[in-house]
Image (cartoon, rainbow, N blue to C red; front, side, top):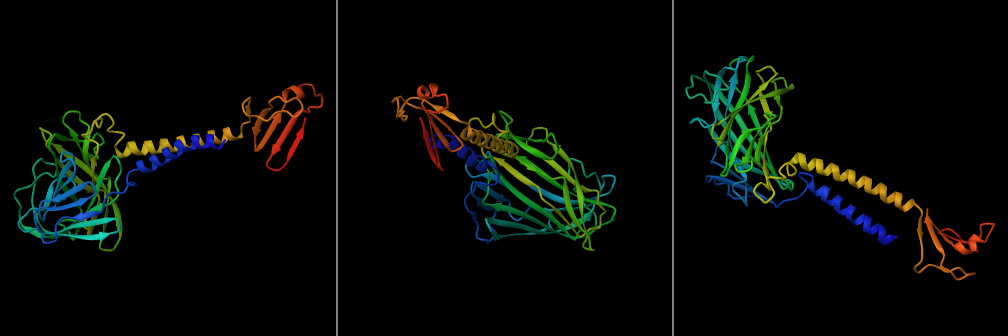
Length: 380
């Protein structure tokens, strides 16, 4: 009986361990290692287990790549912050690559990884045009002040078998508002690596990079639908995120415009946190066919399915242990009267030994031997 239970429980235990390991963020990777010595070489390179993050010097342009396959990666450039009126027209713009911008890269060791900070002070100037236009404003008018920008990249030791996620925060502080009735927005550019192309997600919540041959997901830039703003009084509000994407004709790059709506302007600070996800299996055999199963959504479904299997298996094992079973022949006890093998019936911790020959001739139901963990009674 113990052998039977072990044979039944062993695969269940293995499935349980697999389901826990498959949950994104559970498996542990190697320690995070900064490859530069803080002397500001260019580019800055950081590694976290199988991930490499490269910064193009002291600017908010970066590449998230796989250390083992350069085709698995995505390049993102945060290009600037815009003040936009309620009609979608540009009022002011602060390009992050302007001559007056000053950027500094630093890092902080935290439990399980690193926080890499890009801190910049950028000038904002009056401008005109449409925020959703394909080109960013090249002609800037009079300056209106400076804004403080912080991009924080979270490089941690946790990653799932489907791939790896690098989360980064965008913080805008001290924006020099032209009008408190306006809104803020940010512009980004996403570029594909070799052997891939980029396209807008159907749900319009991100840009996906796909393999040229199969279209299987290789990487994605994903943004949430809300941001947090804080006013001079200390009050905080949740802003909605309106996204507009401008895919290029050849699929090499895609422009992204994110507008923070639904709240009054004039706030002191804005905080927002998009992320970049890499598909570790993108170019491995079968990577295209099981791309969804290897996505974070697919792994969650598999983990939930494994949990259901475990519950059903546990119920089945319990029911089997409680159901009486009959054993015949083999090395069974023999009847002390007629010498024939006795039939064994088991259930609820009781073992009943019965001689069918003697019992068949017993009107009082004798011919049985009962063994229990508490007592033993024999009648035959």
